[in-house]
Length: 68
Image (tube, rainbow, N blue to C red; front, side, top):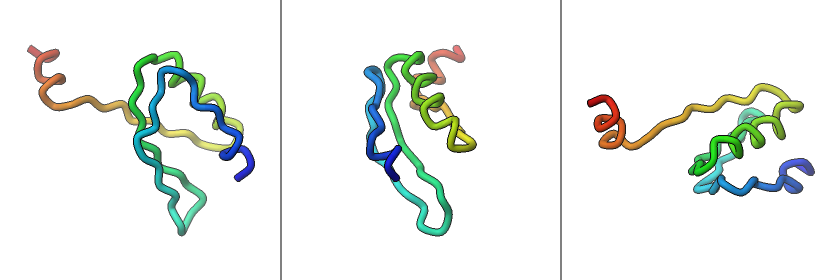
């Protein structure tokens, strides 16, 4: 808990919402990433505590434009 309270969110990341699972020691966080390097920094911060899982997503319309 102390680490979570002392966390500094890197520039380039905006935390939109965060949820804590009450039955397990797990946090779910929805973030908007403007800088991929900031995402790597964030992952390293939590890496010493255990497994970090990230699932990059984008809006459907934007993905369809990229796919042609």
